[in-house]
Image 1 (tube, rainbow, N blue to C red):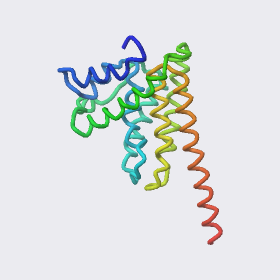
Image 2: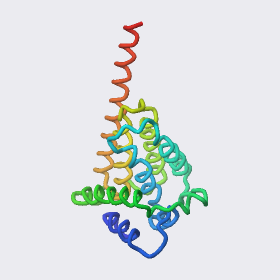
Image 3: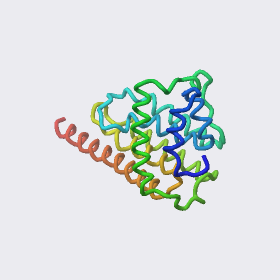
Image 4: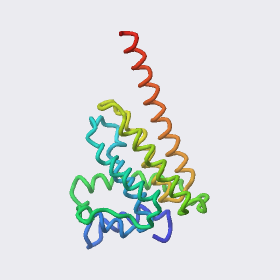
Length: 200
């Protein structure tokens, strides 16, 4: 991928190509950016404003495991061989990817590479991985059926898209959304504990 702003075009080209539409082929397409695109795919469902009842926790756990690889300094993502063959071209998966492309295109309208020197360094990758873990943790520990996992997960999605687009403004937007989500969880959780103590 020569230019960061071609993310949506690369995804569209991949969807309409003759090759396999598997997790492995997506990793090969984005190469060193495959961490970011997988974070987007894994957290896309928790980022939807729908109460999942904890059903998406497995995606958050997988994202954390991938983030640990990024922190450890792996230049190429590792996933089990059987995961590499997971098909991403089913009707539901295509709808999800199509929805993601709409979001990416909206961001690309105003996004442009900003402070590109901050990206793709050992230190920036460590920070990226730590922020993803923080966002996934916030989404994981959100009370079930409250929808409070939406903002932390959306923060990770935006943060990852900022890395894909190499735009620090989108990264900051993701951080703001993620921090707001975690702060909302803490505030509502503290209020609930306070009310319970009053009843006891």
